[in-house]
Length: 354
Ligand SMILES: [Ca+2]
Image (cartoon, rainbow, N blue to C red; front, side, top):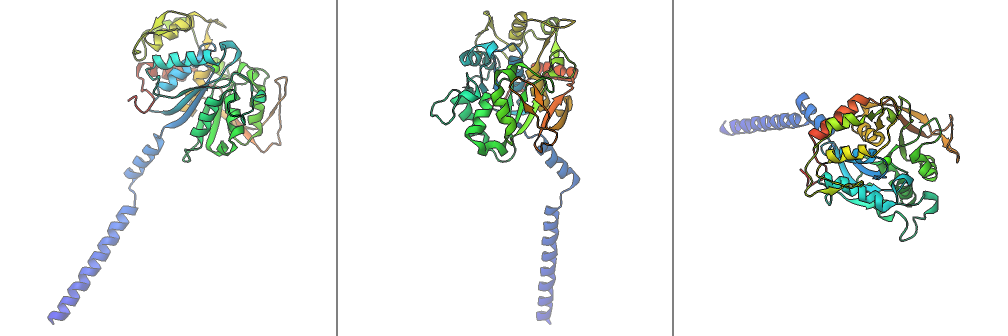
């Protein structure tokens, strides 16, 4: 009897443990709504991985785009900054010097890689050579676009497309790993500064399979980034002393020394032409960074990939199965409000910055 009782107790215990374990397993595999929400939040807050390619010394929008990017360290993982030379800002050394100034003013010089890219245009450069024009920037893009397999690295280009096209030509295996977001073109109208500085690079990229988005410029129209413009008085009122204090004064490209990006911004706006009524200046490149941060700040549409002719005009290809994305109709006020907010409440990019 004792023996039977012992067996019964053992069986009961076994069943109890088995059910208990099953319940425990069940608990672990079931995610409560709260847990699901926290998982979603973690995924949502994953930083956007960006390599920023800029003709930093052209006009004044590149500098504001770079500062805005570097002040959104909770949104962007800024893998590196690469420069290219367009005709308005001098050679690549001048472009590099201006990008370096901005990074000093953002206290991030030496903390985020800054590399020189191409002086020339895509069709004149052979990336198969050991030391080609733009090699430092191009090789950096290749090395840092192939490592991350989880999600695409954004090659955010706000100048000519030479460095990006050379990288994809040299290492086409990186194409599935990247998305190119380019500030350029007046599509569907012809012409535009970044486009004209290297039509061969743009043509090459259009013919690849790379995911490609064009953030339109459209001078003088309300539908392009041209609409994201500010007046000199607005800058004078909002920018003094904004941003972190540089470790030591930085000499600006027009002379004088500055300790904050806000003060340098005012100086840049003192040395630029204004357009329209009231006279204002567009922050084209900054708007491109903004719509990568928040896609709700503009409208996008997919189109069959068109062809660009050598005279800068577009030819529609309605039957093309390759599509690209066109960005237009930018929320000027929301973008500028966030820009100024980030000058006041910056979160510095870079691993060692925060
Ligand atoms: Ca630019």
